[in-house]
Length: 221
Image (cartoon, rainbow, N blue to C red; front, side):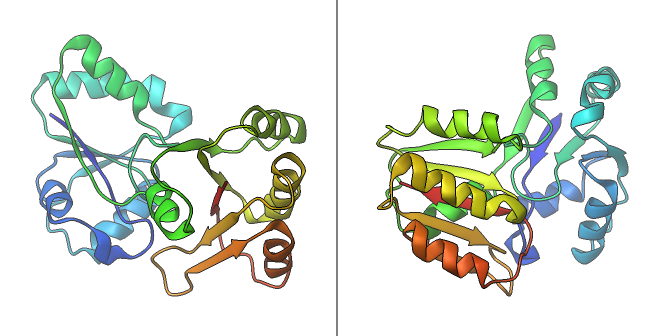
């Protein structure tokens, strides 16, 4: 069976008991980055030694036939990504789709999700929201996507690189106006967790004075 296993987004103590149990029992572990997963297994002191198989976006399609063959042999296979819940802006959905097509059983072990964590920390309404994934790198594509949802009454959530964060704040001010409420969530669950919340002028000032630390989750309404 295929087990989709959620892993911590930062703090390793957020691993679930079910996830640890699964990691101790899988024969093969599909990994976005085998080095990251190998390090996690060492930190968690997992005694099991599953076969670690690279399974990232660029190779997912070509590796699916082999994975399906393993599953049809009734082997226990786990799927993890570098952090959080697999398939959400991460590899895996093509494999899950194929499993359903051929009638193979899958299960998911829920756990950490940067999207939900940021939404909860944002202080904005959480009853309805839109997740925009990783925003396009090209200016035209990004602005087209943002403009598409500018009249939505729902809270928006997106991933963004720290190097393009100020540009995003400028775009949000342009499309949503100077009163749009923004929450920039960085280093969530880690020692230097930071939530910068406010209107564009305030957020822009705080970002300019802070140190870049990895990808951000941005929430706005």
